[in-house]
Length: 80
Image (cartoon, rainbow, N blue to C red):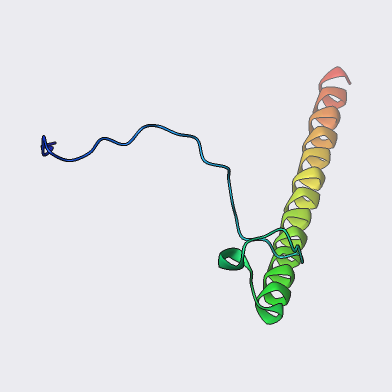
């Protein structure tokens, strides 16, 4: 990487973190405020993602319990 010797160097200064928020908050600067419609759409999307993750977790739990039941049956079959 080539740099220009005359370019000013920037100090590594930690700036306070700012981020978009879907919930109303007057402390958020105007630059990061979203419209009501955008917030509602974002919250609906978050809810949809949470439902999908919960469904995956339920499926994984059912698969694990089925695998455990199958392996327990195999152990009992071998003992018989």
